[in-house]
Length: 173
Image (cartoon, rainbow, N blue to C red; front, side, top):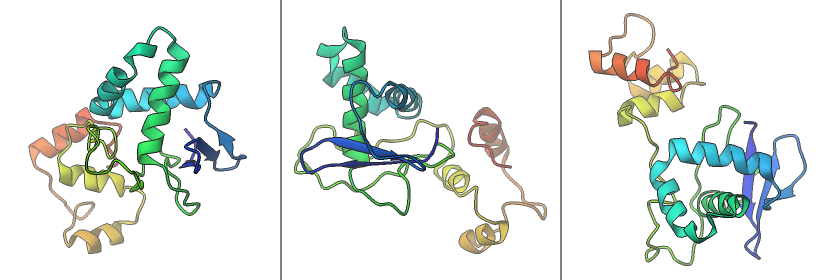
């Protein structure tokens, strides 16, 4: 998946802009992006997917509408602000969630489930933190975490090694 920026218009329409492409409205006919996003949401954020599936279950027989509603809501709740400097989904497929100004903040039953969902992984919080910083230099990692993780004989516990083997999509070493 290429880098993409999503944002909400004042009318509540979800727009998206691929890195080197024009701004487009997310519609039921945006099948390529809807299909890719559905796959990512289903595998990486199963709790959010389950909540959205239940919310839009009345549309389940119309698959295109059902998938569009799930993706649209996920994007509205997590990528609503336009910030051209950093894409919401980067070229590595990582999601960069934003604090969306929502009128239901504090009373929405999906808060913490659909917005700012939890990533489905068996990696520890520390392993996740390191894996997402994979594109920065070794020196930066050493300075940032005040420990040597990579090179010069860094040691991981057996559990760390097993987790990175099982979750090879997160493995950077």
